[in-house]
Image 1 (tube, rainbow, N blue to C red):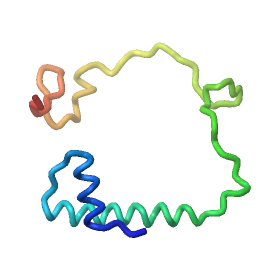
Image 2: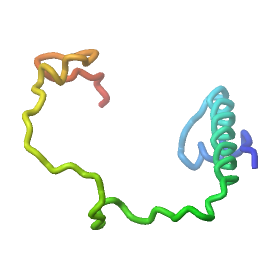
Image 3: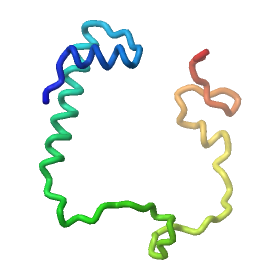
Length: 97
């Protein structure tokens, strides 16, 4: 089922989002593309594939997990070395609130 402009407007209304006409057009295309991809995945034959219904921590002794080891941390200078903006060993980010 292709997604329509009205579908996007309804989703925006339910999400209390105000979208411009350009955003509505862009989201219509993007959501349509996502649904097409999901339809493609639904075409896969998964009848012989056992569903994954547990995580690796539920007692699986074959899980490939490493032991917890105490190791030295990086330190502020190394951790912030590649940051786009840092000061006094801290990451600088734009003010949000």
